[in-house]
Image (cartoon, rainbow, N blue to C red):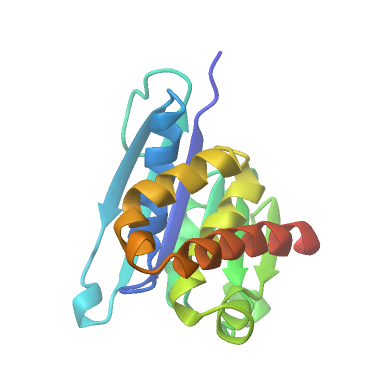
Length: 188
């Protein structure tokens, strides 16, 4: 029997949620797996939350929608309550430690809640523009849904034209992904 990995990523418009989901789906497809990516932009241009839904499986995925996720990533304060409906006792809930949140705002029914300093690492160690790639690394570590090598290949496919112009961006993005992996390892 196949096991589908269901991922919900949410944040403010412009935080790169949709890019992370697209890279995950591309990496899974390149590994020969089935992947569905559904963007939900809502009204983020007017200050809403952008959500991306990703499912990855070794077999055909029957339905693009899901009620609960295996992993939920919330990148903004408003994304936390917006994603609560996708959390159950099997869900790992990850949020950025820069979000000021009261414990009562976090989902009570999650299997595990992890707080990681992705924004702080992006701003202080790497570059603010790779915040979403740090999150990609966090998803890779939390789910093991695709390999690091395949994720790097998908990033190369998506950003290769920028890497050709500025080769240092490749190393920056790869380091950001590795830092995301490390952050989840440290938070467990």
